[in-house]
Image (cartoon, rainbow, N blue to C red):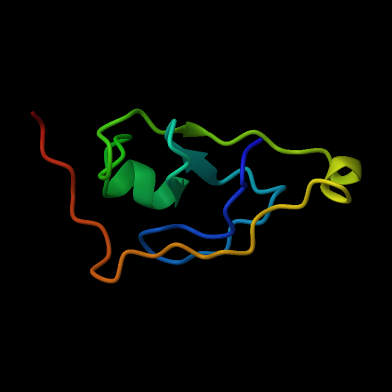
Length: 84
Protein backbone atom coordinates (compact mmCIF):
# COMPACT_ATOMS: atom_id res chain seq x y z
CA UNK A 1 0.00 0.00 0.00
CA UNK A 2 1.28 3.48 -0.84
CA UNK A 3 2.48 5.61 2.06
CA UNK A 4 1.05 8.85 0.63
CA UNK A 5 3.87 10.98 2.01
CA UNK A 6 2.75 14.39 3.29
CA UNK A 7 5.22 16.75 1.62
CA UNK A 8 7.50 17.59 -1.28
CA UNK A 9 11.04 16.35 -0.66
CA UNK A 10 12.46 19.46 -2.37
CA UNK A 11 10.50 22.45 -1.07
CA UNK A 12 8.53 20.89 1.84
CA UNK A 13 5.18 21.96 0.38
CA UNK A 14 2.28 20.16 2.07
CA UNK A 15 0.79 17.44 -0.14
CA UNK A 16 -2.31 16.05 1.59
CA UNK A 17 -3.74 12.70 0.43
CA UNK A 18 -6.25 14.42 -1.86
CA UNK A 19 -3.66 16.65 -3.56
CA UNK A 20 -3.60 16.69 -7.35
CA UNK A 21 -0.16 18.34 -7.14
CA UNK A 22 1.67 15.27 -5.79
CA UNK A 23 3.91 13.19 -8.04
CA UNK A 24 6.11 10.23 -7.13
CA UNK A 25 8.52 7.65 -8.50
CA UNK A 26 8.24 3.89 -8.12
CA UNK A 27 10.08 4.12 -4.76
CA UNK A 28 7.51 6.68 -3.52
CA UNK A 29 9.90 9.63 -3.46
CA UNK A 30 7.33 12.43 -3.46
CA UNK A 31 7.45 15.91 -4.99
CA UNK A 32 5.08 18.74 -5.88
CA UNK A 33 4.35 19.28 -9.57
CA UNK A 34 6.17 22.62 -9.49
CA UNK A 35 9.48 21.09 -8.36
CA UNK A 36 8.97 18.02 -10.56
CA UNK A 37 8.49 20.15 -13.67
CA UNK A 38 10.72 23.18 -13.12
CA UNK A 39 13.64 21.68 -11.18
CA UNK A 40 13.63 17.93 -11.77
CA UNK A 41 12.38 17.72 -15.38
CA UNK A 42 10.10 14.80 -14.42
CA UNK A 43 12.97 12.60 -13.19
CA UNK A 44 13.50 11.48 -9.58
CA UNK A 45 16.88 12.75 -8.32
CA UNK A 46 17.18 9.74 -6.00
CA UNK A 47 16.64 6.83 -8.39
CA UNK A 48 16.45 8.36 -11.87
CA UNK A 49 12.90 7.06 -12.32
CA UNK A 50 9.95 8.77 -13.95
CA UNK A 51 7.75 10.99 -11.78
CA UNK A 52 4.03 10.37 -12.25
CA UNK A 53 0.90 11.71 -10.57
CA UNK A 54 0.25 10.09 -7.22
CA UNK A 55 -3.18 8.42 -7.04
CA UNK A 56 -5.74 9.69 -4.56
CA UNK A 57 -6.96 7.33 -1.87
CA UNK A 58 -10.72 7.76 -1.35
CA UNK A 59 -11.47 9.62 1.90
CA UNK A 60 -13.45 6.68 3.29
CA UNK A 61 -10.42 4.42 2.90
CA UNK A 62 -8.15 6.84 4.79
CA UNK A 63 -9.94 5.97 8.04
CA UNK A 64 -8.47 2.46 8.18
CA UNK A 65 -5.52 3.15 5.87
CA UNK A 66 -4.22 6.62 6.79
CA UNK A 67 -1.60 8.56 4.88
CA UNK A 68 1.90 8.79 6.30
CA UNK A 69 2.77 11.67 8.62
CA UNK A 70 6.53 11.16 8.26
CA UNK A 71 8.02 14.10 6.40
CA UNK A 72 10.99 13.45 4.11
CA UNK A 73 13.02 16.51 3.11
CA UNK A 74 16.35 16.92 1.38
CA UNK A 75 18.33 19.26 3.65
CA UNK A 76 20.09 20.75 0.62
CA UNK A 77 16.94 20.91 -1.50
CA UNK A 78 16.91 19.46 -5.00
CA UNK A 79 19.46 20.25 -7.64
CA UNK A 80 18.29 20.22 -11.25
CA UNK A 81 18.59 16.78 -12.83
CA UNK A 82 21.21 16.62 -15.58
CA UNK A 83 20.64 14.54 -18.69
CA UNK A 84 22.56 11.25 -18.75
